[in-house]
Amino acid sequence: MKRVTGIGGIFFKAKDAPALRAWYKQHLGIDVQDWGGTAFTWTDSDGNPSGGMTVWSVSPVESKQFAPSNAAFMVNYRVDDVHALIAALKAEGCNVLEKVDDSEYGKFGWVIDPEGNKVELWQPPAGQ
Image (tube, rainbow, N blue to C red; front, side):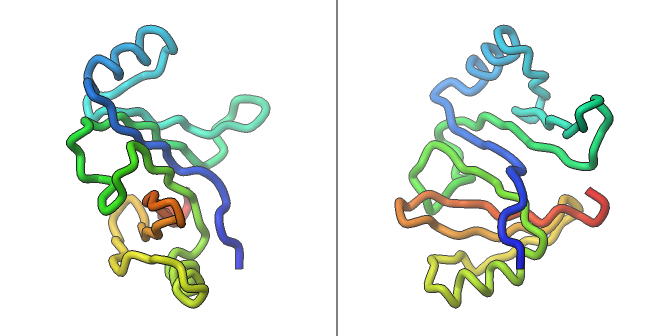
C-alpha cells in the first residue's frame, strides 16, 4: 500500500492573517483568494495541467482548525486510500483521530505525530 503520494496543502496561522496574506500577494505574487488562500495547480514540464493541486492558506491565530494540536501549522498529505492508511496507522499504535470526513473535496483523516502536530491525510476525489 502506498502511503503519502504528495503534499496537498500547507496551512498556517498568523497573528494578523489579512496583513500577512496581503504581504504574500504583494511581494511573492501569490493569488490569495477571499477564503484566505490559493490553490496551485500542478503542471508538467511543458506547463500543462497534470491533474493535481496544492492548497496554501493563512488562518487567524485563533483558528481551531489544527486542534487538538497547538502548532501554528498543518501539512496536508495526499494519499491513495485514506481508510487503509488510517487502519495501518492505528495498527502501528499511532495517535489517530477517529473521525474521517467524506466531502465533495475528497476524504480526510488525521493523525497526531510524536511532536503533537496534527497531520491531515487527504484522498482526493476520483480524477484529481
